[in-house]
Each structure stands twice: as C-alpha cells, then as structure tokens.
Length: 364
Ligand SMILES: NC(=O)c1ccc[n+]([C@@H]2O[C@H](COP(=O)([O-])OP(=O)(O)OC[C@H]3O[C@@H](n4cnc5c(N)ncnc54)[C@H](O)[C@@H]3O)[C@@H](O)[C@H]2O)c1
Image (cartoon, rainbow, N blue to C red; front, side, top):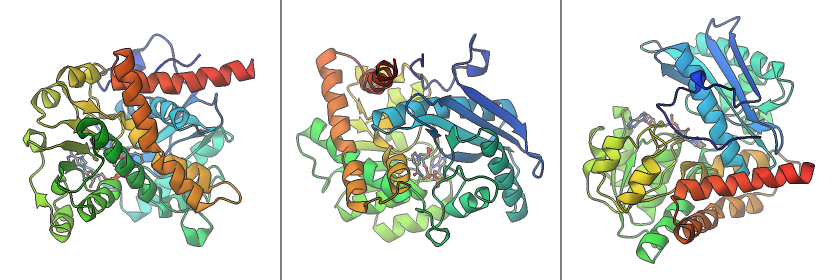
C-alpha cells in the first residue's frame, strides 16, 4: 500500500523505518563519476513518469533523499491528474560549487540513460530542473524509456509550455475562489523564479494585465522583467510585499515556517515542486487565511502533456483542454477542503489517494 506523501523537507526519509518506494537505484555513473539516484515510488497506476533533475546538493545522500521526496510527489501528481502513470524521479548529484561543462553533462546524461535502462521500463524519464530536450536526446542514446525529446528527433519537446498553461489555469481558479472573479487584469502578483516555467507564466500574466513583481537568483533573468514591464526586486524578501498572489516558480522549500508567517498575500499558487518546507505548512497557511494551491495539482500540466503527447494519434486540442482542466481540479480541491474542514493539501492528497485506492480495488 502506498502511503500519502508528506512534502516535508526536514523529514529525513533515509532514516524512515521502512522503504516507502518500490525501487531505488543509486549508482555511480561509469563515465561521469557522478552519483545518480533513480527512485520509483509507485507503479500502481502504470509505469512511473517523472523528470530528471541535475542539481547541487551538500552531499549525495541529500540528492538521494530529494529523489525519494520528488518521486513520491510524482505518484500524487500523476494520480490526481488522472494519468495511468506511477511516480518516479531521477536526480544527478552535482557537488555545491561545481559546474558541469558540456562534456561532463553529456557523460552524466549517458550514465542516466544506463541507470534508467536498468529499471527495465518501470520508470520513464523526462526534463526537469537542470535538463533540457537536448539532454533527453542524449539519454535516448542509452534507453528508450525517455520522453520529451526534441521535435527534430521525433519527440514531443519540452513540457514547460504546458506546465505554465496549467499554472495559469490554477491562478484563475484561485483568483475566482478568493475574489469571486477569475480575471487577472489589475491583480498584483509576485513571481519568484523566472526559469522555463516562471518566465512563460510571467509573460502570460503580463499579457493578461497583471501587475507583476518578479525576482530570480539568476540576475540574467532581469532582462525578461524589463521586457514584460514587471518590477524587478532582488531575491530574498519577495514574500514581504503585499500582493494578491505569491507565485513560487524556483526550487522547492520556498514556504518555510518563517516565510509563511510573513507572507502578505491572499493566496499562493505556483509551479515549484515541494513548496512546503514542512508538511504542517499547509495548516499554517490555512490558519493565516492564505489559500494554497497544492503544487502537485497546479503544476501537473507538463506531465499531462508528456503522457498524452507521447501516445499514438495524440491530439493537441485534447491535450490543451486537459491541461486547462487543472483549474477545475483545483476548484474541486478547494471545495472539498472547505466542506470537510481540512487543508487544501489534505483534500488534494485524498483526491490522489482515492484514485490510487480505486486502482487497487480494480486490480483485486
Ligand atoms: N519544467 C516543467 O515543466 C515543470 C513541471 C512541473 C514542475 N516544475 C517545477 O517548477 C519549478 C521551476 O521549473 P523550471 O523548469 O522552470 O526550472 P528552471 O531551472 O528553468 O527555473 C527555475 C528558476 O528559478 C530560479 N531560482 C532558483 N532558486 C531560486 C530562489 N531561491 N529564488 C528565486 N529564484 C530561484 C533559477 O535561477 C531559475 O531561473 C521547479 O520546482 C520544477 O520542479 C517544472
């Protein structure tokens, strides 16, 4: 039985008394020498699907732990999105303070391909933070269990457009729930993280007439702020500004206890995975009267796109409609949370778990 995922960044999953995951492969890449962790949390609904992250950590154990946390989140995300997919994720550990040149990145991607291949199809990889469609083309040299390849390689490309479209739908559903109107024009929002998804979302929100404050740890992203007429601030204190929405689009853990206690917004809705630094952050947000869109509901557009676009005869209109349906799923979550007097996280986890349990009943 798959237990509910707790998005607790301080939880040391490695010290848990039992392994909650079906398979975890931790290996040292033969070419790159880098530690790679491929975690398959659940295949109850189908082969696991989840991206490959290349990221800096303090130690390889932290990278393994992140793969455990992220893959469990993928089980919930794929189940809540109604996909016949389980949850998995891979992480390539890059030591803090080091960068991978093109040769080292290629070696890491070939090693990742070998690791994915060893799991025999129980896990399919794709892009995530630190990887691109071109990286997936390198992974594909070693395994067929990869999606999101560039179009000129017969692939479906990167999922970020769909993720941004899904978060946009989540933003309008959230505005509707809080203010009784989904209209973006005139709403004030802060976007933290202007990468693949945050950058696209910022453009969409600016086009729709939102008043945006934006930030990123990468100063090069400031050019985008200028281009779309958003106000740029240095990263660190962005959550202190009074706005309608706070939109985290960087890496996980942005909603720490301290940040939650200082937020001055009506709602939080963003693309970042594992936004809550502690699982009880959902209660703290609710106590402060801040509506939180569970990340694994709001950011499911990319995985919906990768799954549907990879099927034979895929039709882009149906994919876009399904991605746009994220707003309806979120409305359902908000409604059940209110009716049952629970947090939006509890309501979203229940939605996913009901789908997982339903699959177990069907299989029995
Ligand atoms: N790409 C997708 O389709 C997709 C799908 C689902 C979820 N997500 C999640 O959305 C988030 C963003 O993904 P992405 O693909 O845009 O990644 P990305 O690497 O392209 O962008 C992340 C951006 O956040 C910035 N950043 C990192 N830490 C920050 C901080 N503390 N403060 C401000 N900015 C910070 C980075 O400099 C970068 O510009 C990640 O958490 C990812 O897991 C992405």
